[in-house]
Length: 394
Figure (cartoon, rainbow, N blue to C red):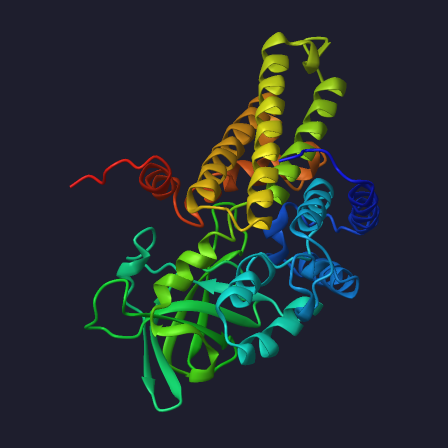
């Protein structure tokens, strides 16, 4: 691919950057990292403010087909995500915009598209993903929650866990067993449903640092219209695999790390230890430089994935490779940042906390990305099987 930008792309990049910079100035102190939007009211109100601003500008549909409100290209979406990540701005629903919308565009009926895409495009509706269960995470096909069709509706029962933002979401998409006696991978259904439907109970799972981001969701005879199906009954696994390819480019997370590295470099330049700025320590300088090189490699990989998506040439292996590299890089960066800050890196809610307590939050959360969206072990299997053609172990 050509890594240069056209004049039009340069202008769009500046527009994205200018708007996100202005929105960043309105960010409340409680908003520390993208997932903090789910944790507290000031952050959630800020998230919704950004979502409405982006929806008004048509930026939530940049790579959609024109007939569904699209107003740009995949590269426009990448440049927009870069700006949001760099300035730490929320407002783009990772589930509704990043995962569900492209899945609907690729696999849903026209009726479903017309019903669900406009509210997503306007930033009016927030979604959550009912995927993992207590005994079904990486091996998602072994799930036990059911959705059995009776007449013109499905009746759902079971439990989902680690559901990000379920307590904030208006709607959910999930995968359920539609034929308890059916053949594995051919007995699932992919459904959309209102989180206010009777029979749904959301219970918080407090995270290690006390934040409320994740939840358990209990389903007790939840009635969902059969028209809310995506794909075909018993073929939900195909939709799961389709959606998985849309959730792993992660350019916004990479740009967030790039901005955080810049801030960490500034911190090292102004913070002294033993009478010298931290930036004078050769070990710290080398580790910062190594991280900068790895981040540039990650950004280049993200551009490549976007280009492949734009040309409909992306394989599962391409997205998996970037997901593994970027998530492990996030862990390495969190360790580096807290090492550099020393005991101060463990502090939050204090004037002594570096970068508004971001380092403490980052260290707590850095491992999540290696597990969510398919564990890195699963991604490495995908790379081995589909990318390198290696045999499966018997």
